[in-house]
Image (cartoon, rainbow, N blue to C red; front, top):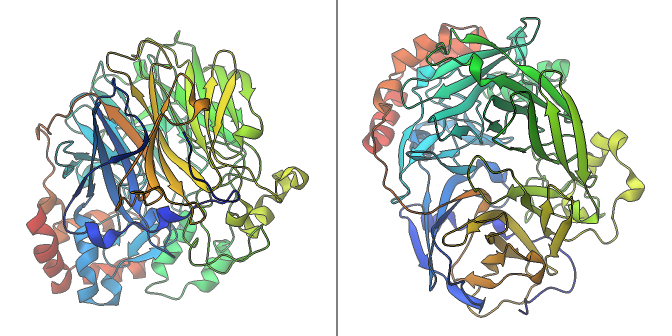
Length: 622
């Protein structure tokens, strides 16, 4: 297959402009065209991929959440896309009519209204559970969606079953959870988290493991061997569940609670002197290790969890591994004492930071509007895949690592899911490579003590790749993207009747081309590529596209064999949880970081404007 390419390696930025204006009213349906190659005869099922509809100059993670569904058949692939619209989406659209303090604005990686709260952007992961599908974010409750219509059904957990991270009377509070909850399909237990970092004013953080079995949420507060409450210092991006353990990762994604709280407060009060005093104006670097808190499932007795404000204590064992990470996998089967972890270690990869227009880049240039808002895609050191056998009670690990030139920019992974009893034998990862034209100089300044500047490929960079790594032998094979292309959102698709083994299927990626790449007839330069998982080094077996295809900034995905509509057997009453008097009473009953700010908000929550906004813009949709 001859894939058009540019004259040199360059990272495309097309994912930052996603045609949101065309999607605002209705979902989109397209039949993709084969551009080159042929569709496999054993292709089947449905692939879901989540993303954020980005636009130039805005942080990509603040755009509207969107879902893509690819319906896979031997003779065609159809694409359906819809925007995820929780209540705060409709409030955001209407808030501009009610004055500046009601409006939502992009602040850091959040979209905030000082009087209404924080947007839930459902853009990270579509996850199939035993009897439903959910879509997730790190900052908000997970929501069930209907796989057939791609419409939201209900949040998981009522508002008062979650604790907000900033105790103010917002209609839309900040709830910190995880984008990767984990389910034991056999028992129907879904494990997630509800946590907060310590905030200004001395308010302590909290760290709760949350269990859901289709009824009320159960909260367990994590404690160490000394009985002290465990603090999450960064965020919890991923959880894994094994036969005997729940594993909670303190992920390398810094949540700046000081900065976020002061940004909110700063919209109604002067806070710059306080910002300098608290050090909230300086960039925090990530911890250079991976910390995982492990909870014995036998300690989580049925219905033993408490309420959000009265959680049940549970012991968590601490595991600490060399090298930071954002994701990890775990074999489900374990012997009760040891777990096997597969961890993509990504030193200095800081996805909590994004490119600002006008700032200096490592390439020697200056960031333009075309890259402003992009999460910094590259690390300042090459990544490596760690395979760790950990004795959980002691935290001791036997570790092996796979690394090389190919592991620069180690990103998202996928593998063949062959049932819980099978170990993870082969994993696939996309990489961002190294693009000095997309790395701000301030990142090097912040992480300088951890960086070997002489080892940085500043002159030529490193191209994006698709990797296959055998976790038993450590053998790595790779496909190098042609000049001007990047490969996002890898997902394993089993062959019909499979997967019978760890390579029995296809790896799908969303491919983006830079403006330097000549376009194939019928392609926008944004395409779906399928690789034979038996040998990714041969390149894609088929490329598909459409003359109007415009992918968002996509992240994770999931494959399912069949589509089943939502049973709608669980439902949260949106209208009752947005009762303003109830919201004000609940929020003001806890310690606030600013009495004056809460008093101001409390008065506003009695105003006719907020009532009118909810009544006219939100409630008719629910």
